[in-house]
Amino acid sequence: MLSLISQNFLHALRSRLLLIVITFSLALHYLSLKLVNGLKFINQGTASVLGVKEALFGAVYIHLFIGIFVAAIYGIWMVPYLHTGRRALLTCTMPVSKWKYPLSYAVLLTALILAETGIMWVTFGMAFGWKEFASQTFPWASLLVTLLLELLAFNSIMMGLAFCSLSFGALPSFFIGIFYFFVTQASGVFSRVAAFSGTVVDDSPWFKVLSKLPPTGELVFQIKQTFRQAEYDYQHYALWAIWWVIFTALFIVKLKYPQRPNKSEN
Amino acid sequence: MIYPPFFDPLIEKRFVSLFEIKDLIVKYRSQVAVDGVSLKLEAGSSLGLIGANGAGKTSTLKALLGLMKYQGNIEVFGQRPGNLKVFTRLGFAPEDADPPEYLTTQEYLRYVASLRIKDSTSRKHEVEESLKFFELDPKKAIRNCSKGQKRRVLIAQAMLGNPDLLILDEPLNGLDPMFMIKLRERLIQYREKGKSIVYSSHILSEIEKSCTDLVILHKGKLLYSETVAKAAAEFGSVENAFAKKVGEAGA
Image 1: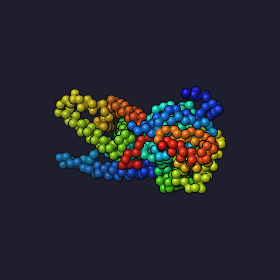
Image 2: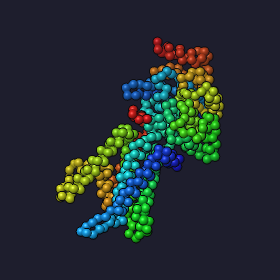
Image 3: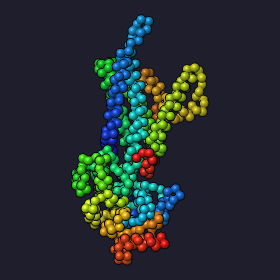
Image 4: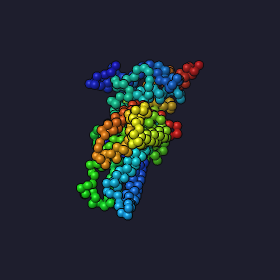
């Protein structure tokens, strides 16, 4: 298992994915937090700045979208690498239990997200000062629970897209992922707006089906709720966990036979 | 027949085949690639699988390894193909494959060795010996290796851990003549230790020099199965045997 994880790490390192995650994350987090730190709101002649918690939530928001991006790239292009093309025959005949592969990919994705989280905290310290971490009001619990939810969601997304990539190829999976994300985000926003205006949408067949699918549309709202109010919708967590198990099982089934290379890919 | 865990086919090799294929049928959609092939391999033998392009050699090997759907009955070490226990005792060098390109030759062999060899000292020693025998630069990335060097890496990884069954699909493609001779001697020594080899190749002279048994496939069917010595005695050479049998089938 350890050798499999180290192979995945070398893959992430030498494909420069790790470097891209660190660089992209560092630039985006630092610039955003610096901008937020410099913002002043003027209300009836009184200037105010964003508080630490609000700024941190902004950073968590950016962290969420970078994490989804990393999970998608990793799941679509890097996870299938050993199982497709000219590597597939060798991988399939190695004395490695099939369940070890998705587990090792989950470990590496977790490591990448933790690296990104570390960068978020470092850039926060650089923008707002290191003393904020020692403050009694610093929301450590909210950050950690939010991170747990994100890790569960990202691993589900990674495994789902990896299964898609093995089934349909990398490029179609990329567009399937974008389409699904857009549709669920739009549906999530629509249902919130409808609820605000008193319109009932939960009874419609579309929303009933949507409520059972991987809840990417609800993820942003759940992150916000978890971070700000420390309230946890356990059904949301359970749904992500169930889909992670389903996608992992489908992925393992796909590993039974070597996948034929997609015509446009190696 | 599935053997109980305490029963080692290699100990009872007088009575048991290392693998046995019965009435194998492999289809790619409606096209039949292998049609009713039956063969087996005893411990300490090396089987040469020969045939023209599209004869069904690679499909037979893939079915044996559990890499594709098939009809018929196959047992390897008394287990179903694709079983993890089978892969711990088997080494496979495919024809059309590449190791992961982001690794160096040494890293890849170390990785495979870590899956097959438990003792770290033996593992280190075998990898070093393998790199030396196959004349591989340990620091060279696989993406920068030539076709011949990649082929050597494939054969090297198949032989790591001294598996009981070695399956080589066109192992000599891209190898220089000097190394072919060196590899042949190594494989003969390997067999003399009681290991078994399945060797699929178009180079009939190599089959004659390296193998104890011979199987000729043609259009998915088994045309001829005999020891190399008897085939050579009957037809003069393996090449003559192949030409005669395929000629008769074609007529």
